[in-house]
Length: 405
Image (cartoon, rainbow, N blue to C red):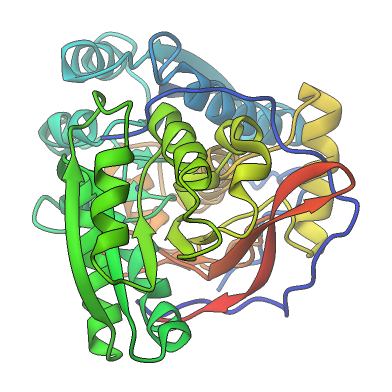
């Protein structure tokens, strides 16, 4: 993936403490940029009646904390833009995605068929995103995905009406492969991840660039998803493999347990731990505490990023919610920004016109750094190398560099 380059990264010493601990399972991820401090300008083309927008995020169940972060990010953008998108009042209808397709698909169907929204933002779960693909494609209503990372969403199941402001599972991990290979200098790495689609896709992305750069895989294990509490058997096998380091993807409750046991088992001092950024993102980092110090990860955001947009975003987010923003918050914030620009640029208020306009929004000035939609409707963005460090009494994902594929 070609990356959109931002300004050089500097660490924000004294940035806000990490979000309070939450243990949940995570998912099945040209024009002037949108400013954090200036409301969207109204144009003659965008004047008129209110625009109906659906916000489809988990409001209940194990994914609810992610849904809360996403809702906070989306709401913050609206608050900063006088409640408008495209210069028009935004009437937002919230729907509970729940935990899977059995709840998410009916919720999306209601937004499209009964609530008659012009566009929908959200979706945490990849199975839901894939399950509603045909609904939005056939109804010709844009869906701006603000989290779900399945590769097929913008790959084999791509649609003119489905866009993503988050990530693909492969891309997050492809970005760090060559860096880990360089760090290992010919030594091998052991791979650990949960046994489900996202785990397999994330590890495939890492192996692609890691091995291409000369890295060697000593072995890999896929642990029962959502069921593994004792990682000691897997960690013992990793230690006996002769690998010099471990690369892992876990999220939510599994990430907390894995990182704590990795440290308790004494591997932190023997085998450096690398991983997908979700391993230490958001509430799980506070729960991991000092056990996470030294872990290096790849992700497209950290609340420690030093750029003007992020400084303003972190300050505003903390003031509004008494919490630090996460990657989930930013992805939804940027979904609102992209939709704002598309609604202003659209020739009319039809779904077809809005979807077409999404392809013309150009560069967005984001807390993550500047990004834009690529030809496949995924964001072209910078991925950052992050290292967990202790700063001002809290553990944070300090940014130590930018990553390239």
